[in-house]
Structures are given as structure tokens and as C-alpha cells.
Amino acid sequence: MKRLILFLIIGTLSAHAVERVSLEQLQSDWSRYTNQTVVITTPLVVCGSFYDSLVLAPERLFCPEERAVGLADGDSTAYYSLAEHNRNASICVHLRNNYYEVRTGDLVRNLKARVTGERQLLTGGSVRTRHMAKDRLPKPRKGELRIVGANIENYFADLGGYAHKRTTREQQALKTRKVAAGLKAMHADIIACCEMQVGDKAPQMLLEALNKNGGHYDYITVPMANKDRIGGCFIYNTDRVRAYTEPLSAYRDTTDHYYSRMFAVGFEETASGKRLILSVNHLKSKRPGRTQYDTNLKRLQNTDSLLAMLPQAVAQFGDQDILLLGDYNCYSQEQPIQTILRAGYREMLPLGSSADYSYSYKGEIGYLDRCFASPSMAPQIVRVRPWHVNADWYYQHGAYKMKDKTMHRYADHDPIIVDVRLE
Image (tube, rainbow, N blue to C red):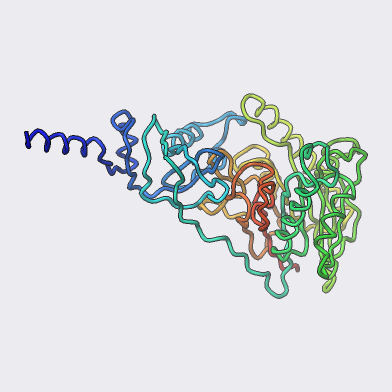
């Protein structure tokens, strides 16, 4: 009888024992572990943080089109290989979690979860993560001009329109505080902004916040009749630079949606009188599925319009030094980016490491925000880098509605920081 009781106790303990497995072991035979609770010994990185789940993998996952020719461009074997790698390397953990407190890039050790299906796990509660260090941004050095490309994510002064149909005044004020705090923290002399409402109301509302404690910022944009749209805008420190030209759009039709999204302005450093041409550009947004082909064609048209405008800017503004910033909605191997490179402009962003990205989507990272320089401008650039202040935070648009008063996640794209020493 005693032996029978001991056998039952041992059997019960074995049935509830938690097996420690590596991710490789788990992935090699999912069916063996299905409906079992395991501890994954492989250190994992948060690749995506969503409302009810996390995407985890041994390392950050790059969007395949960041490193290979993608579907809209005719695709390649490398593209499919990278896409397959991302699928096989990642697992999805369903959970109850403070999802907006988890950042992509965070580390997860000894994850305990129940295996519910292939690459699907379930926890009874939250997942503990070790936060990666927040990205510190040093100030520019003496004699350097800091120029920033920043997508500020549907910044509207008018409520009830295109992007902010459900936004309240309180939420709008919080958004303004977050954007202003983020832009101030960059110590920028010129900021090329994307996704700001067309017209004067939105820049003026943001300038009020920027200049509240003694700032000296002004703005320049392209006027359009349709105020219920997003456009581009330059915000600049009048103590450091001045705009010496009127803006020149890449589009002639003033009613075209892209007339205010793609334009160039000549800027002059007030202390030295040295000049450069800045162009802010926001190309057609991506769309998933079959329409990706159509949006790619539109981005190619945007690129053609931009490249046709730049020689006009050189002739009109009297300078060869050109810097192209903005949200190009293209990863590094896509046709519009390659078209700009073939036109003689240099990619100035660092490429190749897991720290090099400006955007995160569905667990994959890459550069949608770019920095290109003309041959004469490139040697004057001291350093270029993304500042990871947005993309690693919870992905949902309008995350500021959760009453987070920090500057982090003021938008969905990371800004691109460019320090130059003009010659």
C-alpha cells in the first residue's frame, strides 16, 4: 500500500514538473511540448509589444526588405530566406501584461509558459523583462549644426478631421507637450517635420509650446487650400539659422496632396553665413498585401518628382550642398531608395547592426526614415544616427492617450539626428 501511494505521489509530481528547454529544442519538436508548461532557457529579446501578446526571438528581426529585394520590386531568393528566418526564429506569447511598459529590445530570461501550438505560448500573467538602457543623446559639439528629420505622427490643430476624429482637447494638449519635449531634447537647430497638419495652425500651436520658456523657434511650410491633410514643415532656431529662400515644392499642382509633403528650403548659418539646401520628403505610405505594388509605384513617382526638383533648387538657391531628410516609407533595398542612390546621393545612415533602425512593425525593424547627401554635402556631415525614443515603445497609434507624460513615444518613428560642420 505504501509503495502504491509513493508511486502515485511521484507520478503526480512528474506530471506537473516544468521542463527546461532551449528555444532550439522547443522549435525542433513543438508537438512534443504542446499543452506542457516549459521554461525556455534561451535568452530572448522582445521584438514586438502588442495589446495581448509579445513577439520574442533570440535577436531583433529585420524587415526582409531592409536587406533584400522585396515583393514590390520583383522579390529575390534572399527575401524569402529572410522572411522564413523571421517566422522560424520568433515565438508569440499571449499574456496579460502592462504591454505599454514593455519595450522592444527588452530582454527576457527563463520564460515560463504553456505551449499551446506551434510558435504559440500562453502565460497566466505578465512577463518580466529587463529594460534596455534608454538611448542617451549627447549635445552637438561647438561649431556643429544639428539637423533632425522627425515624423511627428499626425500632428493636428483642428480636431474632428482626417486623423483625429476621436481626439479630445486634453489628449491633443498631451500630444503637444510630448512632441515639444522630444524636439527640445534633441538640441536641434533645424527640424524637418513630417505629418504636420497643412497650414499655419499646427506649427503655431507647436511653436507656442517650444517657445514657452524662452525658446526662439520659427517655422516655414508650404501653404495649401486643403487643411485637412498632413504636410511637411521646417522648424528652426532663429538664433542659429535663417531661411534665406521661399520653399520650392517637388510638385507644381498646389492642390496635389504631395505639394506640401515634399519641398526644399535654403538655410544659412547666421554666425558664418554658410549655406545648405534641406529637403523634407514624405513619400506614399505602405499598404499591406497586393496594394503594395500600387503604393510602390506611387513612391517611385514621388522619387522622380523629387529628383527633378533638386536641380531647380540648386539653380534657384545657388548652392550644391543638399541634405534629404524625411519619412520615405521605404526600406533600404526598395526601388525608390536605390533610385536616389543611383542619382548620386549618398546614404548617410549607419546600416547593418541591430541598433540601426527607425521603425518597428509587426516585430520587424528597419529604416523608413532616411538621410541622403549630395556629393559636396557628404564630407560636411560629422555623424548621423537614429535616436531610439519612439519606435521601441508600444506600437499603437495614439499611445499618448494612455496619459504617459514623458517625451518617449511622442510619435511612431524614431528621429534621425544629423550633425554637420558647414564649409
